[in-house]
Image 1 (cartoon, rainbow, N blue to C red):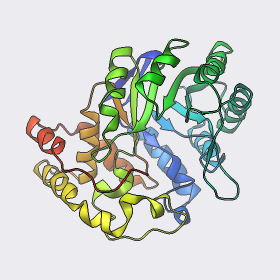
Image 2 (tube, rainbow, N blue to C red; image 1 turned 90 degrees about the vertical axis):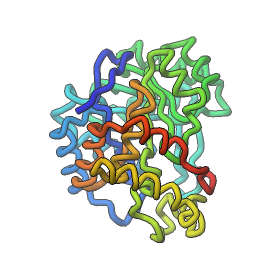
Image 3 (cartoon, helix red, strand yellow; image 1 turned 30 degrees about the vertical axis):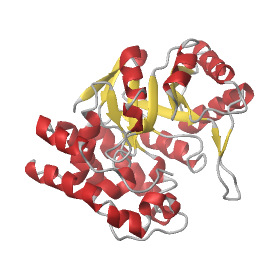
Length: 316
């Protein structure tokens, strides 16, 4: 598999990793099956996937246990990334941000127990907490590295200015943000910042939460599916964004590839420090996604995809 260097971890990882959130929450929760997900994790290891992404808020807590169970015995072969800083409302309300040092330290210990690991490979600040100076949160995370509980640190959904503030205290190993053919904001400054500072950029939702695969057009979503209230997944928005699918489909057909593979290949083409973590709960989709690392898009393909029309609907 195509690999990407994780400089701050001193090792490489497969360019296509596995986002595990859908195994426990967010996407079609009625379709959750732990035994099937464990089979997907095992298959991913067999295919050479080495970057696995989870968080304490996924489930909450159940996803870390599932990932730890599925990767037990492979901890030296893989990179497990987890996160702190989002707390779910047990009543079903919106998540709140919490990144005070005491919470970070306690959450790290709990994540280690759930994962069954001695050290967290990559620990992200899931979101910056507006009630806590970033320097305090990042300082607490740096303390976990000094204590040997964490190997490297990252941030999610941040600006380049926030990255500068964090990096001045402790090196930023990775930045995780949404990046895909219909969400390109990080290309303006965050992806270039990562390239200039030796940080990996990890793209989540590279398949546009399934839309860019061309398989969910016209589909309805249950109220507990994160897409139910997403502006891009209203029937009108899905219909109006079909022009995006038409171009992706044309590029994919030229290579005998799927639309999912074309979308992931475009994401990886945004830089040699860019990785993608598409999520799936099914082995066949996992195999399809991993194979995208071998798809070489031409300059003409990239130009066509770069020229896609603006997307209708806000990201959230």
